Image (cartoon, rainbow, N blue to C red; front, top):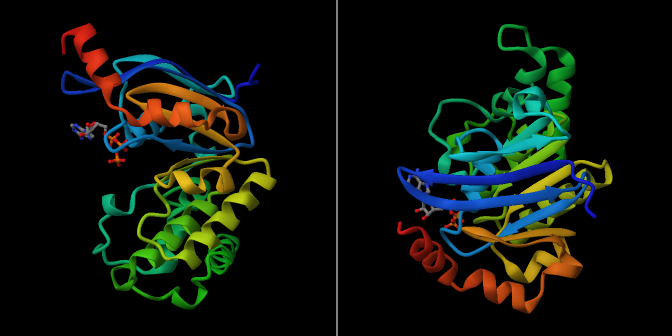
Length: 248
Ligand SMILES: Nc1ncnc2c1ncn2[C@@H]1O[C@H](COP(=O)(O)OP(=O)(O)OP(=O)(O)O)[C@@H](O)[C@H]1O
């Protein structure tokens, strides 16, 4: 029995009238490093956006330690997909990281010395301290990704959602991000990552959710990340089955 910390129950999500996630049930324990894997268009980003209340499900509920999102939102950090961010926004690296502190300081309060120190420390952790005054538009993709990680780190959250943090980064950055993820796990944080590389699931994560419009398997990597579940996740007939059944 999984002692659930995050619970997703009967969640169905549609864009316009087209369902993309169907009857999702998940129980995620505290302190896991969880990958969400599945083929392109499987609904991975949609799932985390729904958990973060950025999308409204057609039905179902999501709770965090028994509470709804709005009661715990300050304890939740999100690193969005790099492609979804406007990098031309005229702001420097330190300010982007400080944005992560607004949940603590409040929009109208002044940023304190402590906030600034935390931001600098986070930049150090991701190896970007020398870039603190740079415009974010003048960074490489991997550097931008590191800055967004630093922004999430200063939030001192309990739960971290990351949408493809390894996308387009070099191997050194990937290793640095993995080390950070493992550090977060040591602090009993719960980390949920949309991940594409099946080869590294076993090495990077201890928990996995495999989806293709519906949940194929979710649990300990050692138990559920099997060839059969991988095959079932990456074949597309789930979609056809559901469409035929529900005439959509
Ligand atoms: N804003 C939107 N409006 C309409 N349909 C959308 C929208 N966003 C995503 N979709 C569709 O919903 C489905 C799930 O998309 P989603 O981005 O969640 O998949 P994903 O598993 O994250 O894919 P990828 O691995 O390609 O990033 C896809 O069929 C996609 O085309």
